[in-house]
Structures are given as structure tokens and as C-alpha cells.
Image 1 (cartoon, helix red, strand yellow):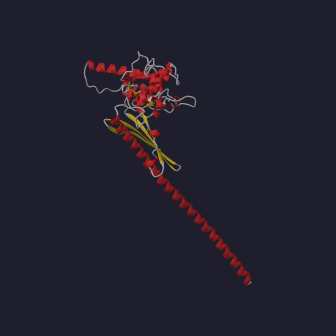
Image 2 (spheres, rainbow, N blue to C red):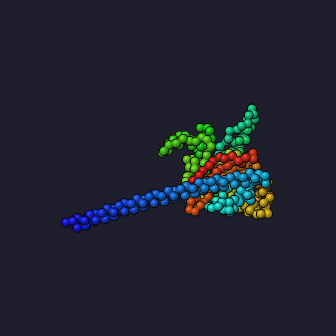
Image 3 (cartoon, rainbow, N blue to C red):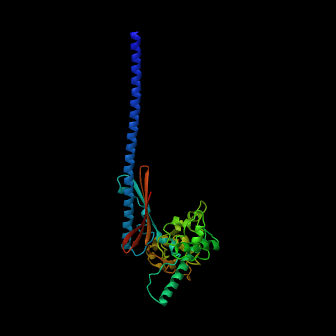
Length: 345
């Protein structure tokens, strides 16, 4: 009996040891997994912090170039240092990782907040007030005509009534009054939608907000596989309706005046891209030197300019497989840079 009992005890002890080893192994594996996850998390957190600071430093680099550009010349073009940042190799600035910078000239786009008449700061009395009001109305009408021509031309090719509906709806959305334009929409229209919402009656703050405006669809704003959208041509920054012809897209150049054709606008692009014409872009009159430009067309200086005030800086930092993008919109005025918007993802 004793040898059998001893044999059974030894077997039980072996089972207990095996069980303990299995439990300890599982605990050890779990501990190692937690340690590894913590190590990876710490590493990722460190990389994320580095990526964020790299992107911030990229924004700072672009800011300084925008300020330095004021000392270099009195106009803005795609030859400026801030515009050439896209092609710069900035990897040597960091021990590891890289950063890519892009500066977009918002002043080379159509200012959607310029379609409505802006409140005047003119304090004059009597007939001067009426004169100023008439001047503002004429300017706003001229700005709207730019958008109308843009919507009517390729690649958008909208019907007259559809283009008018969008413009009138934009006026009603951005102005401060309750009066409704002929093809526009005010509070009653937007409250009747599902879900209902209110008419802004104030400046548009982002391009995404345009999707709330009557007549503006996702396809029109952002385009489809077959057709580009309006978004790259529009900006919510600025309200004087001025467009920098040194940086504007060919579609906007064509829309500046009634008789400007696509071929003429493309000739303007060719002229400003010629290195030999670089210094000529200082003058608003440079377009008159374009060989095919019609001699009877004059670009008004209250809409066509050669200097910019609003810029969007996009900084993308990368490290191993991680990426961080920071986007900042700035206003350059009176020798200073003012932050208007900051987006990070």
C-alpha cells in the first residue's frame, strides 16, 4: 500500500508543479505583453510629441518667410520663397523624420463673403452716405458677376437660373438683413428643411459651411471623379473681393471680365510662369503685355491686385509610419502675422 500511495503523491505533486508552471507562464506572458504595449505606447507618445513639435516648427518657418517676403518685394507671386516651400527638402533640419510644407495664397481665390454689401465705416453725412452706398452696391454687383461667370463657364457650366440661385442664396446667408433676394432663401426656407436650421445672416467661416446654403451640393463644392469642385477656387478669408492675379487659378482669371476667354486666361498663366517676366508681375498692368490680351479690356484695381494678405500653411511631419498634419490660416497685415484658424489631425 505504501509504494502505491507514494507513487500517487508523486503524481499529484507533478500535476501541481505543471499547473503552477502553466499559471506562472501565463502570468509572465501577460506581463510581457503589458510591458510591450506600454513600451510601444510610450514610444508612440514620444513620436507623436515630436511630430507635433516638428509640424509647429514648420508653421513657424513659413510664417518667417511670409514676413521676410515683405522686405524682398512689394508684391506676391509664385516665385516667392513661401510659394516654393513645397519643393524644399527640410529633412536635414531634424535628426529623424521629415516635414513637408505648403503655403496656399488665399488672396488668389474668390472671397465668398464679398457677395454681400459690407457695413461701411464711413461716418460722413447727407449725400455722402448715399454716394458711399451706391459705390458699395456697384462693387458688390461686380464681385457677384465674377462668381456668376465662374459658375457659367466650364467645367461647371451651370444654367443661368441655377447660378443666380446660388449667388442670391449666398447673399441672403451672409448679409445681416432679413430681406430675401429674388432667387435666395432666408429663415423660412431653412426652418422648413429636415432637419431645420437657421439662416446664418453673417460671414461664412469655413468652406464646409457652404453645404448649408441653398443650391450648393457636395458634388458642386468638392467635385466628382468626372468634374472638379468649386472648393479650391473659394476662400472665406477677406471680404473686399480683391483677387491676386499673380496666383489666381486660370478659371478665376477668365471670370474676372465678361470678354476674357479661356485661351486668354491660359496666355496670362504662360506669361507669369515665364522666368523672364518675373519682375514684371510687380505691376497690376502686366496683363497688358500678354500678346493675346484684348486691348479694350481693363481689369479694375478694386478687384484685381498683385499683393496678398491671407495665407494657409499646411505642415505635414512624418516619422517611421506615423504622420501629423497641422494647418494654420494667417493674415499678414502691417508687418505682422495674425493667426486666424488652427487645425490639427
